[in-house]
Length: 444
Image (cartoon, rainbow, N blue to C red):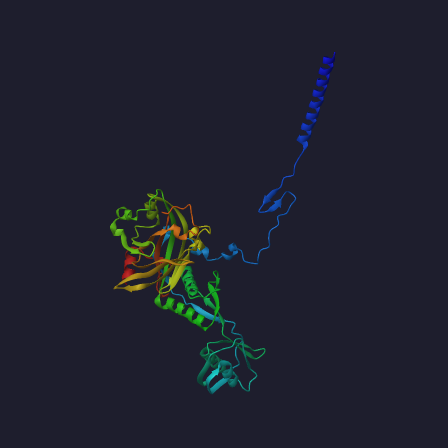
């Protein structure tokens, strides 16, 4: 009887325990927990708003790099490239802006001035009139001269040129304002390659803040007397020398498929010795002058036998004959590339070279740390350049990298010549010269 009672109690406790466990299990199923995400030390849930630290008022990178000329600079049509093209001559006109009103129609005669400021010379000239002279800058040069006869406008123009200053006249207040800086508008030719050559030459002369209207083909710039002289010289050279040089460029990063560098000597049996014109060593790398048989397609086919390659950047740049220009890899490539900092600069001219006509150029590879390598390259029209042996590790800034030590930069450059001829000549704009016409042009 006692045993049956004990069994009954055990059974009762077991049932009660099961019920309690079942109740606990049910409670655990309905318990829910709020989850939060931590992103960059910010707690984020469905009810929160991200909070970001305040940034300085600086132009974003994407806005800073916006440029209307990049689509014109960063594309090359290798299937329709003209190594020599002809464009008709167009007048390039410079007009000074902000000159104010016309000066009164007064006559000047027998006026001498010696070693005095422009302001003092004008005040002496205008004594007895209602016109005053205001200096918007100081420290102007002292001038000396003599005016026998002429108008007031001619006299003011002469004295301000002697003092290397600019004037504007306000007729409402009767004031002549003198300023060391001026503003000009250049009416450019229609050909966009010539426009880019002029722009790059001006930037090379350290003329900044150029305002380009590609629709109207005009450029506005500001500067002092020296700036005006530099721009005038660039325009004069384009008009007198009649040539603009341009280079089309492909830049590749090359990855050998094995733990060995690319065997560039294999180009000789691959293309033939006659198609490798010159081999020019640099401090780093080597420039090969090659025939038109070696172009972007044949070069890529040759490299593909030994390595994988990626196009990093592509574009074009131009310059007036005898000037300098540059191509920024980062402008026409992805910003995350190691080689973004690389600049390809060029100076050169087309003309007589030891009795024959050649493009005599100097190509410089540089980064923000200075010059990496340079090559002096005299070439015939139609020859191309292939720069090899520039280690990709030249651009690595970290102690270690995943990039193979045999990866290298390869630059393919194809020079072009733009001839500017008399507009009265019966030549269609951008006429390509090939075959016998090209040979006749080069010989004459």
